[in-house]
Length: 116
Length: 117
Image (cartoon, rainbow over all chains, first blue to last red; front, side):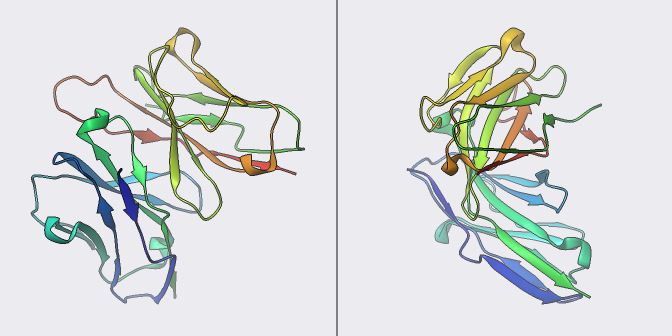
């Protein structure tokens, strides 16, 4: 069965530090999508990135970057030069072809606290 | 364009009472999903509607939970009778019809925080 593990429950950093949020997944499917969502204090889940299983290229978007490694079943998320506004809960998620991509399997989330 | 909306934002009820949560998806989105996050745990899938039909309700915890989507527009999730372990945040998401590519992004609402005392 599919599973997503975010081993870091909470991370605290000081502004301008770099921080990496870990995500390890399990799936028997060869075709799947991986996601990161951000949940700010306002509560909604904000989509950050989607990556399909055939695309292992790393991606950079401003201060955000993602490292997808199929060999270790990991999809880690790095924030460079963190800011207070980055404080939120971050969720990693998986969607499999076997489920018709209809359901998302989430990890438990990592709470990131960025202090000034 | 309005996003996914959920009502109420917060509900506090006593064990044994009934609560109904509402989700209004983005207009035109045929797919509607319910998820739940119990404190400190992962967000778990509850069920998936395609228009008014239940496509997958494998995540519904028990028969105290009833979801409906009459007319294929908004959806309600009723918990009757509520138990302490039902406390958590209930998220709704919607996506467009699965046309073209294999995946259509799910847009999430702000969630309803349910507290059962």
